[in-house]
Image (cartoon, rainbow over all chains, first blue to last red):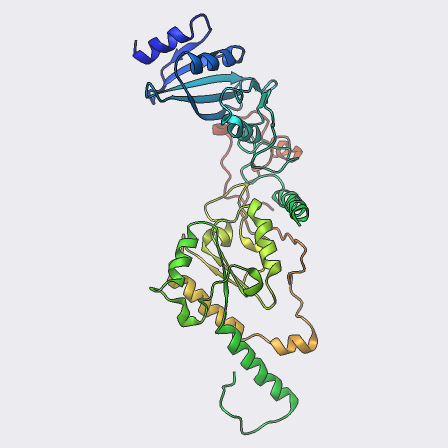
Length: 170
Length: 223
C-alpha cells in the first residue's frame, strides 16, 4: 500500500468508498454522492489536499447510471493528487456543491452544469457559463447532435443578450 | 478600362462618368484599409503579412485600423464561433460603405475541421464574402493573392452608377439587421439531430442506441 493510500485510508476512516486502479496511475476513489461532501471536507482538513484542480463529468450514454462526476484534488505539501468519481442516474443528476470548501470550483461547476445538465445543489449562482441563458440543451451530452440544434436561434439569442448589455452600458 | 492619360476624343456625359469610375476604383483598390480580425491561428499569418517580410504596404493595404469606422476591408482570419458571430456582424455593420470581406482560411470559409455546434460553418452564413482563401492557415502569399484578386474585382465595380441609380440590389448591404443565410451546402447527416427531435426517431435511430452501433452516415447529403 502506497503512502498516499495510507494517508487517505487514515483520513477517510469510517466512510464508504473504494480504491480504483485507473490506467494513468492516479489514486482514484469511487464513492456515492451521500458521502461526497464529508470526503471532500476530510481531504481538505486531514489529508492535506488544499487545491481543487478539476470538476468535470463523463457521459456514459446510454448506460445507466449515465453520468460520472469527476473531481481532482492537489496536495502541495505532499506533492500528490487524488481523483474522486461519483456515478449519477439521468433522472436524478445532482451532486452537492463544494464551492464553500474550494470557492474556485464555482466556475467548474457552472461549466459542468452548462455542458452536462448536472445540478450542483447549494451552488450560490448556478447559471450557464458558456451557452446563453435560456438555452435548453446540454452540448457535451452524448445524444446532442454535433451540428447543434438551431444554431441560428442560438445566434439570435446571443445577439439579443449582447445588445441588451450594450444598451445597459450606454 | 481607361488610363490616366489625357483623352483626345469623346466628351459626352456618359464618357465622363466612365472616367470618374476608373479614378475612384483606382483610388479605392490601392488604399484598402483592412480591419484585422484575428480570431485564431490565421491571425498570426495576418500579422506576418502586414509585417516587413511580406510587406503588405506594396499593395497599399498596410494601414490596419482597429476601429471599424476607418476600415473598408474586413479580413475574417480564423475560426468564427456562433458566440463571436454577433460581434463580427456588428463590426461589419459599423464599417462605412464601400466595404469588402475576405474569408481567410478554411475555418472562416467553410467551418473547416470544426464540424461543431459552436462554429459557424462559413462566415458567408452571416456576411457577404468577396474572396475566400483556402489553407490552414494560408501562407501570407495566399492572402496577398486574395488582395490582388480583390483589387481586380474593385476595378470592375461601378461606383458612379451606384451614386446615380441607387445602390445595387445585394443580398445584404449592412442594414444593421442580422440576416442569417443558412449555408445549404454544408454536408449534414440525418443522424445529426437531437434524440428528442421527433424527426430523429423517424430516421430509424431509436433513443438509447449505442453510438458504436449507429450507422455511420457522415457524408450523406440531406435532401
